[in-house]
Image (cartoon, rainbow, N blue to C red; front, side, top):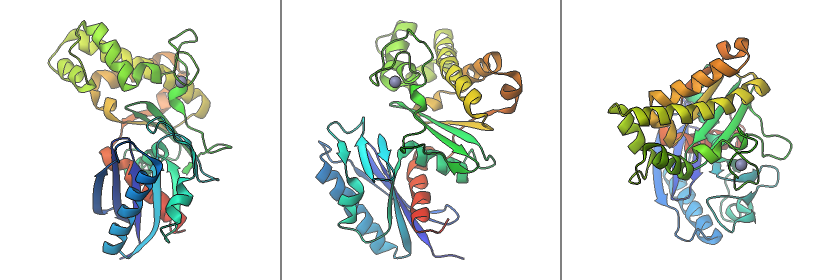
Amino acid sequence: MSHKLSLGIDLGGTAIKAVVIDESGNILNSLQVDTPPGRAVNDVTQAIVDLINSLYRDRPGIVGVGLGSPGLVDEGRKIIRFSPNFPGWQNVPLWKLIKEQVSLPLALENDVNCFALAEHHWGAGRTFKHLLGLAVGTGVGGAVILNDQLYRGSSGAAGELGHVSVDLWGPKCPCGNFGCVERYLGVQWFIEAAREALDDDQISAPDQVSSLAAQGNQNAIAFLENRGEILGSACVSLIHAFDPEAIIIGGGIAQSGEPFFRGIKRAIQERAYPVLADHVQVRSAKLGTSAGAIGAAIIGFETGSLL
Ligand SMILES: [Zn+2]
C-alpha cells in the first residue's frame, strides 16, 4: 500500500476543481471553488495557491501538483499563451506565479490533454495504446495519445482537433479557419442550429434537445444524428491521420445519447477506409466531470517522477 499522492487541479471558466488521488486513481479529496469573478490573473493565481495549501495541509503525502488549463499551454515555457475562457490572458506565466508561493513540484498542461490522460489511465480508454480524446462542450477540444504517450507536438499545442475543418466554405470560426467542427458542435452554435432545426426559440441548452429526442421527437433525433455525422466526418480525417484504436468522446454534448453516437459511427462507416473504420472504436468517456482534475493529478505524479 502506497502513501504517495498527487494533487490535480482543473481550471475552468466557472469553477476550479481539485482532487487528491493515490497511485491507483482513487480520489481521496475533492474540492471545488468558484473561479474568481473577473478572472484576473492575480485572483485566479491566489485561488489556486489557496487550494494547494489547504489540500497539502490535509494530505502531506502529496508529491506533485498538476494544473490543467484551457487554451494553448506552452509546456516548455510554462506559460498560458491564450485561453478562450479567460479574456485578456496573453502569455501569462502561471507556472512561475504559482511556484513563487508553493514549494511542491508543479506542472502545467492543457485541460483536454488531462481529460484524455485520465480516460486512458482509468476510464474508457484503459485498454488502448493509441487513442484520441474529444471533449465536446463549450468548444471542441482534442488530445492525441500514441504508444501510451501524450503527443504534445513541437510547441505543446498538438491536439487542437476542434479546428479540423469539415467544410472549406463553411461558417467562419473565431480561430480564422472556415467550417471547423467546433463551429457546429461548440455549445453556442449547437444551440443556434438546434433552434433553427427544431423551429423552437426556447432551446437554451443541449440537454433540452436530448430530452426531446428521448421522448421520440423526430426532429430532435435527426438533429442529434446530424451533429454526430458532422463530428464523425471530422473523426474520419483524424482516423486517416492517426489510425487510432479508439476515439473517446466526453464533455456535455457527449451526453446527448444514442442518436448522436449513431451519427458519429455512421459517418465513420460510410467515409473512412473500411479497414480503419472496422478497427476503430468510438466510446463515451467514463470519468465524468472529474476527468480533467484526475488527469492533472497524473501529470502531478509525472512531475514528481512517480508514474
Ligand atoms: Zn476553428
